[in-house]
Image (cartoon, rainbow over all chains, first blue to last red; front, side, top):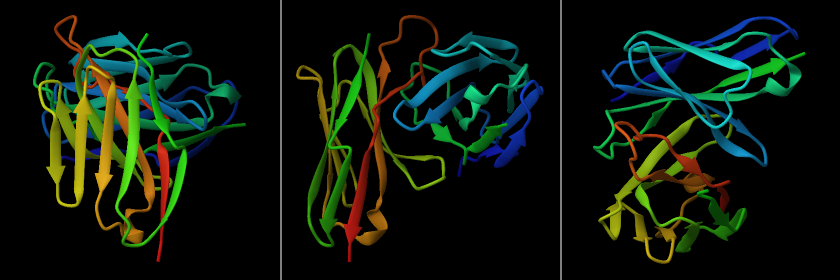
Length: 114
Length: 117
């Protein structure tokens, strides 16, 4: 089975802190994604990556950056956390585009910024 | 801009009932459509994926249909069980415009299903 692992399930950070959310997948998938999920707003794409060191902005990239130094790992970085970034963050992966492959999600990381 | 809508937002049914969840999308130029299940506080689990050229997909008690021309999909759950209680989300993947669009999904808000024993 495909496994997408998000290392931190629950985090509490202070405003202004730099925050790293880590995600690892074990199926050699090319694509990896970061979404955030908020009540009333649903899931929104922050960033995605289709190869090592490659990234593209999603719908809400402001205040975030990403890093993909290895194929299996995709990190989301909040440069200076703010209270409006309190949310559930979901990492996902899938095989390369054009194949219409299923996307697999991690369990989510609940981030609270105080 | 593609928008995905799921109605109703919440649904409560007695155990054993057959039910249909609805999903509509505004732009018929999609690559595929997926249905997901999300349990409270957890990630999403893919249930069914329908390619744009397909009309339906089945897995066990689940059947998903796709009508691209009308911008609609339905998820049919047969003989519902309390264990089916969860939020069900549909998501569309836009038609590829470059070398990568796979997984760039646009989600509906979900339907929260409760199956009462």
